[in-house]
Structure formats: C-alpha cells, structure tokens
Image (cartoon, rainbow, N blue to C red; front, side, top):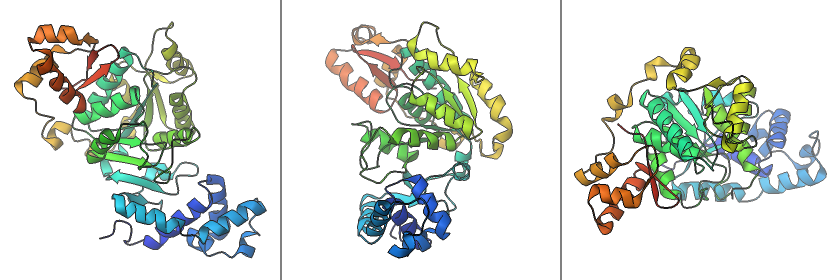
Length: 376
C-alpha cells in the first residue's frame, strides 16, 4: 500500500500543502490554522478570503495562494513514495505526544524507521562538533549505559558528540533518533547516508524540512527545539559558550525539560558552556544514576526492558576483530602501536579497522589515532 495514501491522507495532504505554501514559516502556518480552524479549510480558501487574514502582506497572500494551487505538494508526495519515506502530522496517533505539547510543534515530520512507545523514555545527548577524545568517550559511555537501560537516545547526527551518542546507543542494541537540519534526501553531515540508514533500521531519522532542503544555517535552531521536545531531558556533554548544544538546552528549559551537563576543565574552551550551565542550575552528571534519579518519576518503567533482553545481544565479532577491539581503549591509540601489539601486517589490519569503524565500534581520529567505543 502507498505509504502516504492511507487513512487520514486528506489531512496529511492538506497540512503539507499549507506548510509548503507558507514557505515553512511556523508563524504564518499557525496564523492560517487559527483563522480557518483546519488545514483543509485553509487550503480551499479563495484569494479574497486569504486577503482577510490578519498579519499577512499582499506578497505573502499571493505566494500562499499560488503555491496552494501548484503541483508542489503532489511532487513532494510522489518523492516520498518513490524513496520510501513516510510523513506524519500532529493528528496522527504516532506523532510523539511530548513533541505535540511544545509551542508551535512541527506541522509535519518526515521520517525513516518507525515510532515506538518506548520512545516516550527518551533523553537527548548533545555537544560540540569539535569534541575532545574525553568528550567522545563520555558521550559513548553514558549513551551506551542509558540505551542499555532501555532509554531512547536522541541527538542531531552532527559529527563529534552527537554521532558518538548515536553510535553508543546502536552498539548497546538500543534505539536512537536522529533529528536533521536538512531534508531526508539531502543528508547532513555529508557522507553520512550509510550511518543514517543504520539509525533508521534501529530507530528513527526525522526532519521537519522538505525532502531536498539544504542544511541552511537557520534550520538548526528549529532542529534543536525538536530534539529537546522529544525528550524528558537534555544532557550537554561538551560545548563552548556559543553553540547549538546550548540552544538545545535553552529550548529544554523553555519546554520544562530537565537539563544536565558534564563538568569540564576550567581551561577548556569546549567545556565553558557546560560549566556555565551548571552554574545556572543544570544538574552536574558523573554517572547515569545522576540522570535517572531526576527523571525517574516521568519514566514509563514498563517500557524499560533492558536491551540485552529485547535484542538478543550486539554485533558478533570474529577472533581477529575481537583481538583488535580488545587492544583499543578510551584513550586514542596510534595505528602503529595497534599493529605492533596485534602482530598483524598493515594489509591485514586495515580492513579490520575499517569494519569496526563501519560497525560503530571504534572512532578514527586525525593522525591515524583510534578510540574505542564503549561496548559489552
């Protein structure tokens, strides 16, 4: 069956049409919905009727009307179907209830993967792209342990802390949700298509932006409000004083979510934001119990099945892969040292490292340094 042409298709078509017609402007979209009462009524409005909507300029009215009567929505729906991508709106039962409660929730969500009830127990782990090996290690350790407890890990799939948290959740056999600041057919960061597919197989990749939307700078604060809106709380692992991670934390505060932060060295530029959050009242975290005790009353404990019970274990390694994995640690190790300790030749070692990296079991750093991801 067509992934879009199901029950409620009319509402999805109309919602998507009005959303695209407003050029993704949330204020304009919600002004139209408030005035007409529904997306269906707004979509069928005449030009003279649209001219009566308060707060819309003549240029906006003309653009909305022209777009509503164009083939844009049909082209987008055909693109969805062609690429196996689905779309939900707030009226759909699968639409996350917590996200529905924020100010101006996304009128549409494009997604790959599937929504599950256990995503009600979600926690965001975010941080800087320019992360230290310590930050990557902490994000991996806490992400793994939280996912192992049954929490869904949410982040933005950016390089650095975000990707480390996603990988750790996958390594634990858990669920993870990546919220993008671009369209699902324009994956950002570049060269992360395979990674996003892996996330979709074990969770969700979602976006409120049209399929081919580029990663415009202004998209990311909107992306960050969704990350916070999906979760019980936000953990900032490593962030300078001006960073997207702090924007996510501020959205969390506005939405009544818990905010957590990892303390860092006072001389570290990438720790200034976390230390500042702690000064402002964010809970200092050194272990996952610091997080669990704050959100315990909000957790749906019936959904907290441990991942070893629900998934039957993690990736299987052959003896050579096990050897190389055992030689890695949470401190970066140079490839030459790994080769000497393993006794393998360079040609034997290279494909093993590549396989472990593709499986998310290690992180390659500049200078041919390798960092272990936390696994059982």
